[in-house]
Length: 494
Image (cartoon, rainbow, N blue to C red; front, side, top):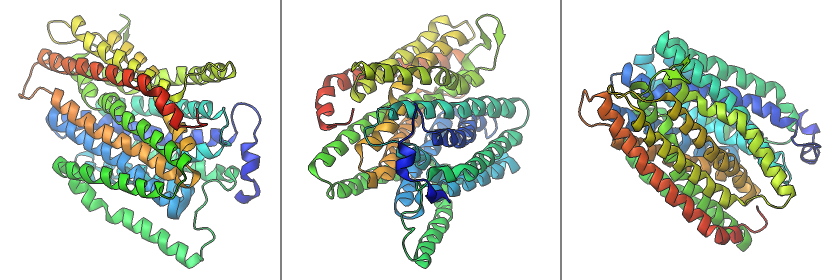
């Protein structure tokens, strides 16, 4: 039985990593194949197959991604209160599989319908597996950041495979086959979790496990039915981005009010930690708004403005580079960065989390200045260097590694256990706002007139990237300056 293994036995593991992290690693790896495979196809598919203009494609991309991450807050809430992390993950995986196969049946006709299933499914899946990783560690365990770093590296294997396979298959063979691949690998990930979940002991079980069976079942069924019933409304909002604006204006303030209510039940020390967590969440919105140009404007930049030659020898599709090389660099450098933090921690020289966030923004600024610099390598046809573009992704990867895995870890360290799911959801809700703003920024950078030349597109997008570089630099400096204040509020959390 899964309950035979106690939480204390799991957390008292020897070595750098608990064995359970490898099972969660594999489950998330295949889910990320599905997610990033679909993400990498979005704007290219909309522009080339649905014949949507670039500005609208950026807005729709931002809307779809925003809803995906907004629903992670809702998924985290229902996992905390009703389903538990395991059932929530299973239900989300089922919906993602259904969504992928719906689109595969007829991509042009069913794209938006299948996307709605994927949005809700990811909302139930994504925040809960990350939360289970956090439960593998004792509070204060210095190995936690390295564990999240390994987890973050592992899931990028799935992102790498999805970014290569789905985009390449879709562009050069069959969009139906590409969307079908996403559904197949999601099924593999779900089966992996089903067959390994016994090793998790009590982690992820329903919070209502001790309630009367009839009452628990009623709440669970209501959750499942409600997640299906919301899809027609979601379909309306995805197809018309004006409604997305209304949703984003409501969901953020509403969730903040709910969180403030939850904070009234905490003691003074816990409230200070929650305020510190909110600072990280707010800055992460800006980080993801810039970073997620990769699925929007940078995807279109790769489609129209890049040569397909790397290092003067290799021929590779620029969209494959755009969708997968960040994952390549994460896979290579994430374990190294994680071990670096461990080594610095032993010497009591590890920078605190606020400084790490600030460094993340400084790397982000360097990356967007490099994207801007691609204009100086362009030819008369508006095509520029794939090498410089790839260098920018190398730089942006170090920014991501300073912020994203650390952020996941911080949400479970700063929040009391009863709010872990909600705070993980809040972290992803911040990503939702980042995605939403990313769409607005991408639309603002797109050339307004139809039939614009590649050179006009190059100049318009790179001017936008220069501005993002300036804003990222300012944010990084602010974080480093205020780090002593935030660090004090974090108490014993490093």
